[in-house]
Amino acid sequence: MIKDYIDVTFAKDWEELLALVALAVGALLGVSSTSGSALVIAFLAGLGLGAWYHKNRKGAWMRIYGITLGFIIGYTLGSLFSVSAKSVIALFALGFIAGFILKNQVRKK
Image 1 (cartoon, rainbow, N blue to C red):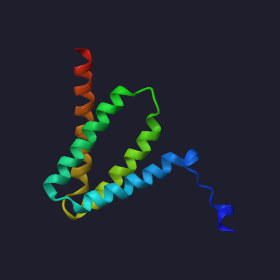
Image 2: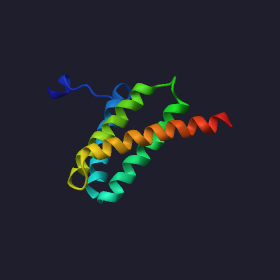
Image 3: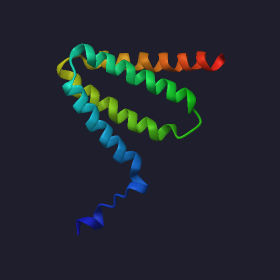
Image 4: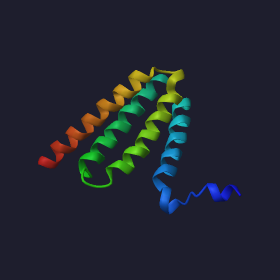
């Protein structure tokens, strides 16, 4: 009876399932990190995503955006005990911009 209402298949809903996993991983990582490492992890996550976005701007950006948004929300909520949410989001955004610019500079050479 419940199966009639819940129709979740990995082939159809893989973005949502991975976003849920990323949310859980981000929350666990945020809870287990100290204040200094929480900020470094947020910056490095933004750095990696910015470089990836520069490489795949015309690809499946919205799918990866949802998965990344799940991670950053989970990570921000998990790290609320050690640092403020504004600082995590700000460092993630700065890392994203830095990753995009660095990938642009490397590509020009």
